[in-house]
Length: 447
Image (cartoon, rainbow, N blue to C red; front, top):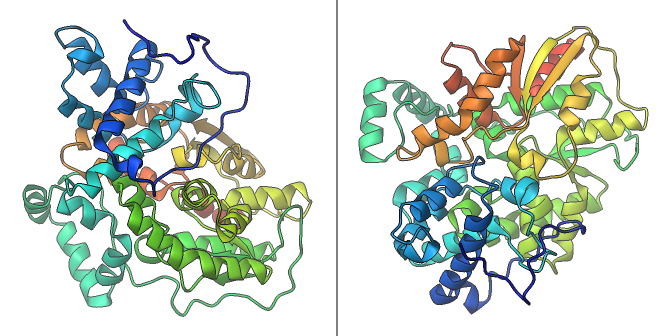
């Protein structure tokens, strides 16, 4: 077994806090295939010599099985074509970087596996080796605006509820017939009445006035994400307005490796968000991946952009925001309903934000309510689980979460990520549904 090291060091781990380097995505060398293969070989060999990440997702078993089944049982026995199978099985959850790898920067080996996979995806996209299906699935704005038209949404929702249609879709497009797919609705933010005139009450690091970035999912797929958040925030005397100019945050295109489209999303979203911040508003979004996009990925892509930095400093997860208010003594605790026990799945892109378990902490404020946190990947991860070639793998990844929920025998199971919640319900196979934490909080308030 070999280990590529630098400066002759074999030190494992680091006492320093992990750090992320900016993504050098505008340089020619970033897309140079020979340079990419050299870095893939270096990092894959380190991963092979460590293997701490074998249980996180299917990217690492794909790599390790290929090595173990090769003639040399080392990386040099694996054909380069197999490297791309590892890339395709990585959905950029960041959990290897956050929870397992002892060689992340500032360690001298400088292993950032997710961003190496992102680089490989970007090279693959630039070379035109991406399926039309994947381009379609990641065009969430286009899908939502078209499928959300009243007549179209009725037809689309009915069609996707048909087993016969789903079989055709699987064979022609490659979306697995049993994978949960969202229903579509008209834009939930249109004609929505919000309170922009009530006086704001600053509290802790919050200004006390929120501009809601509804996200594609909140606008077109689960409008209750918007209505539940509005009800809870307005009950807590937090004025809310809507970010009407919003476009997709760019996370789906990032996961595809389409970095130019991510840049276009930045150009569309950052100026109006920065203007709202300058006008005294905080930003809140109900989907963890979208918040993470503004907190981490865009700042790493545009490290010298002051507007991106301002948005990063002023965007919050909803429960992070509410817990800030509670610590400052301004969150209402006039709950009308107990919730009993909740099996709470902690979404990966929420964990990556490094804010702690704020959703759990807020729900625990409700009398006679017990929350059991499950910090495992649901396996859904953007569009990964709906693809016919990965659906069964995704279900396997989700199985420990499903088993934990069944063992808990809780009154509710829940996830901050609505897509993860639906995929967990798909794995439960008992007709039950996940309840979003904000819906549970709204119910506890009796709203």
